[in-house]
Length: 192
Image 1 (tube, rainbow, N blue to C red):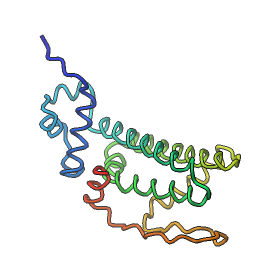
Image 2 (image 1 turned 90 degrees about the vertical axis):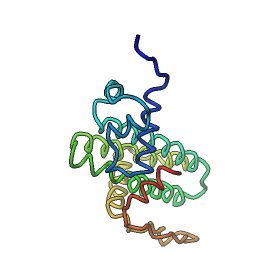
Image 3 (image 1 turned 60 degrees about the vertical axis):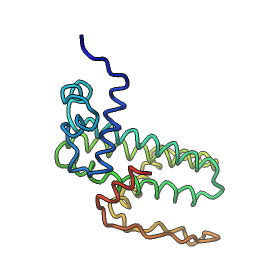
Image 4 (image 1 turned 135 degrees about the horizontal axis):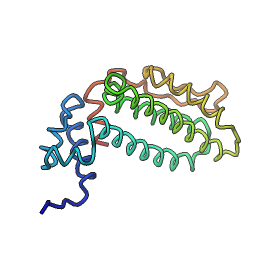
């Protein structure tokens, strides 16, 4: 009779996250996940057909948390610039935190890369729409997608600093993000 393991997917994802945090992206493998989760490699393949499918699930869960956190913050902001800065900062952190995953997708699984990038664009447009609605501004989805494209450009160049518009009553200073996309940043992202 086969052994029944409760919450297998959750345990596998927790093991993968732990490996990412502790050892970095390059050391994540089905064998290491099996070892960390104390399950067989075959069990993992019953839930995830390849390493990329585990990564897609992790990125999707992390994105859902980002959306929840950002929308919670943006539902209380009193200045749209603060809301846009929050979206920008979260997107930069997310991109830097997942750089190894996105690099893997770009090289190993182009379909996953395109799908994750499309989800990022659509998701960020949703964050901008939410913020605009909070301030009673009604923009089309297309306008929010254009704004997201600008964010996307900034994400590809993380040394770019978010600057408030000159008409801002109290310009805030921002800390320039470190463009060193090291394993340390990945570990820091997963240890939040």
